[in-house]
View 1 (spheres, rainbow, N blue to C red):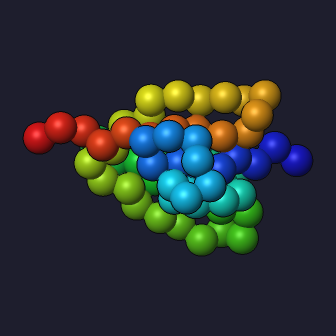
View 2: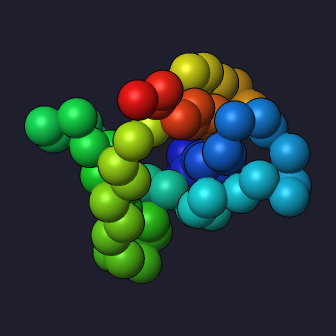
Length: 65
């Protein structure tokens, strides 16, 4: 099973936004994330900076206003 951890700005344990992310979509500038249990989270004001499929993580960065 391939699940990922989402980080805020840098891949650091103190910056975890969500663990066990199973599904990510981007709609209307918002990142919609669902974890393995089906819990959903809407992340606004961020964009995907890095995806590492081998290490199972994604780094999101805040969009400057």
